Length: 435
Image (tube, rainbow, N blue to C red; front, side, top):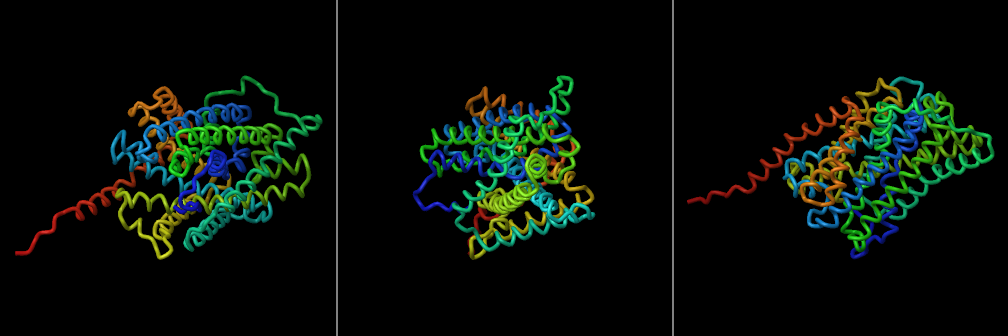
């Protein structure tokens, strides 16, 4: 994948922190308040638990990067601990997580767009069809080739942070003036079922914390800066999410928050005015579209990389004259489109919640495998054990449907792995000499 960096240049600590936060802040925070509103204070405790659990996993990834630099990436950690087949399965599951993340972010963009074009949300099948159109628009852009995007990435991050900061400031002013109030806390409201459900949804918003470990080769003094960037980036993003989502879910009436297609814009409209609310929605759309573009790049690059390592057939690794993995991009977007079409009967919130849980479950298999790999490789074993338990608990919270589908989709990749191994065996067979 193109880095946009000149040869020999590396990321310092602050740039690495920005990399972590930029990859983590996507669509989750823009739609999650609607999903979390019915869960009340369970959602607040879920944010605290999930942020703490993600920090544990982040420390495991960072420690493996520092102590096992030869393994290079999460797939390499699992290969070193358990072999190539388990590494393929979790890499394949992570690819599933990537294209399902594309689905959820596309749905988030369309949900916010519906605040300007209500017919999108009122007409059957229109949310899915519009999201499919967005996916292919971004796919066409990626098919034109990878461009240097350093400054654009910084701009995108700023656009993501502006509406989040606005919500926090408005909430503080409203509460300070006494013109707003938070839903009263009742201990009887807290229960394990809602807490697990909230944790599974909130964890989606923190996916991507592993990017500093993956990019360790591009970070200055990685033994020190990768752990710091991972932990600071994860912690700051978790705090930002906690404040924003708690403000929206606890200060808006539950029915209003739960039924809003753009909960952050609804919050700003209620406590400020419609004009700034529309601006927040514009920022959210731009942010989501930029995130769709970035994740579509990932969904092409990941299978290309796996093909280069011999765990996917060479067909997936073929690039065009621009160096673009066109086949992998098109196949990934076709899968995403089919998934959106199959869920066309759901409303936007229903589509979003299903693919959110599916994406979370698929990524959790990788996180669980890496935590177990750290235990096996005797790297921060106490953190690894806590991280593995946390990953299992979040998988449970995602529910049987999403976790079951993620497992089925993971195993579905095995025929392609065997195909790739057969290709390798044929290549390595000695050629018989003619007499």
